[in-house]
Image 1 (cartoon, helix red, strand yellow):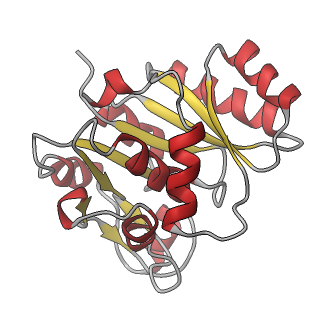
Image 2: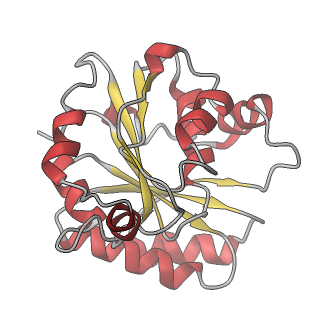
Amino acid sequence: MMPRGLFITGTDTGVGKTVASAAVMHRYRGLARLCYWKPVQTGIEQDDDTATVRYLGSCADGEIFGEGIRLPRPLSPHLSARLAGARIELGRICELFSRIPEQSAPVVEGAGGVLVPLNDTELMADLMAALSLPVVVVARSGLGTINHSLLTIDGLRSRGLGVRGVIMVGDQNSENRAAIERFGGVPVLGEMPRLAELTPLAVRAWAAADLDRDNVLLECIR
């Protein structure tokens, strides 16, 4: 039986995983007990995705699990760790994962894309396989997204991971959406525009109106 929770990955870095994670927190608050977790964060001096989700998702303390690997320099995890004189250990991340309260369904946000290296031998996909959570892919809506999205979906499935859907970010593109759904065999759970004002209210309003209208993800988190 697949464990409760979600793993939020993306087709690239900076694609919108963090805002999508905040939207998921808004969308299912009251329907399930969620707990957001960012296991690996690089460039911590400039970016703190945990703090961003706490703010944009209007998260209470119990909805955030703050422990994790925190590294300087906004680089691939393996390189950021190496330059810091450290090594990311998959077992250590899994041990941290086990500390998330059992009554909560974790919403885990990856770093970068599926094939980003964690160390010299293991990739983000290996962490995803170890956690075995259902996966949501965040993708851009514009040119190039069909190829990037389908490659990501294929890579996940080749490792036995279940892809529950795609969240597209950017200007709506019905042709790209249709192609991803047809060739990827997954639903697009929502099309998030580039919000004019990135605020908790704006993220909550979009999530309530347009994210996962068919409740595809409910069975993953209840």
